[in-house]
Length: 285
Image 1 (spheres, helix red, strand yellow):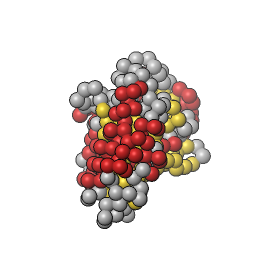
Image 2 (cartoon, one colour; image 1 turned 30 degrees about the vertical axis):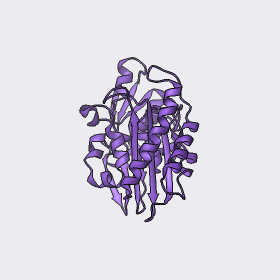
Image 3 (tube, helix red, strand yellow; image 1 turned 90 degrees about the horizontal axis):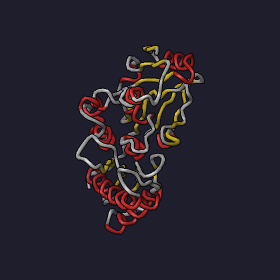
Image 4 (tube, helix red, strand yellow; image 1 turned 45 degrees about the horizontal axis):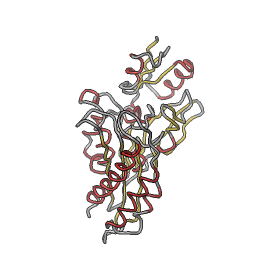
């Protein structure tokens, strides 16, 4: 196996192109190295992205945040501005693994690993995050909810990488939250996850909302029907009950060792409702 280090996104793309189907990018490596260790993948070439400045920065401009795809969870958690603007996104990333894993695991890597149970992805979808992809044909932007196409699969071409993720400037009266259920107290894979981002006007009426679910379908789900249950209404019990019902209706989980279909459908509605309440509290209501 060859190990290569790129210092620009263009160099990384060229190395991926040269390596073909057996070349793999490495951002944090917490998923890639584990898969290599058990023989699930056998790369002929690994291209380390950690030395590319563009992929290692968090840049704020006019309230928007551009997060490099190789920025670690620990670095996200230490960024006061990002934590204040998008606490749900930061907290979702912080749920991944141990302290040691947090020092390496990256936001871009968690997305591109394409697990249906990835914690950061529902929070990013709820936030309306957009990815900047770089390949031989140049750059293109894709909404996070369009990146993952199936378990372990993405819309990226073999020689494309995620350069950064962009979070929009929250409107006044906005808040977000992400919640998950796991069998243990920490360091486990989500049985169910739910992210909500919303905006409330001064009288408490919801003017905008996005809802996303994880671990209840082959891909993380954006659920506009759940968001529509809150828009134009105050977050009273009736509105929250409709949100809960819409989240359950959208869920398409499987039975596995971590949870049954019936259990997941029940819990996903509860978590979506609780996340909406927390997001509303963070919006100042």
